[in-house]
Image 1: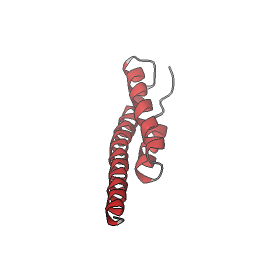
Image 2: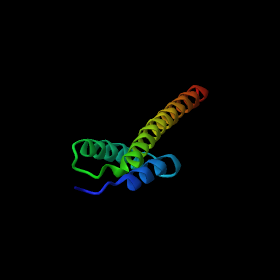
Image 3: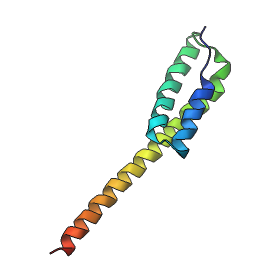
Image 4: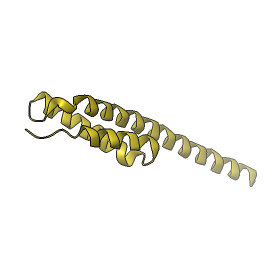
Length: 89
């Protein structure tokens, strides 16, 4: 049976909020999903289920918030470019 990676997944999920954005939140989401499936199948130590679930949820939320932030930034840049083009006339 493989050891759980709950602490690592939770750390990646939290870093997705604080510092690294999608570079750590997406791996937390993917690794958390895979590890929870392995725990359900009995292939991984289930004692880290709570940490793994918390890390997966943090990764999901951080990914969604980061993507919303990126979309907002792109929209604001487009609006600014359009406004600058209209003022140049």
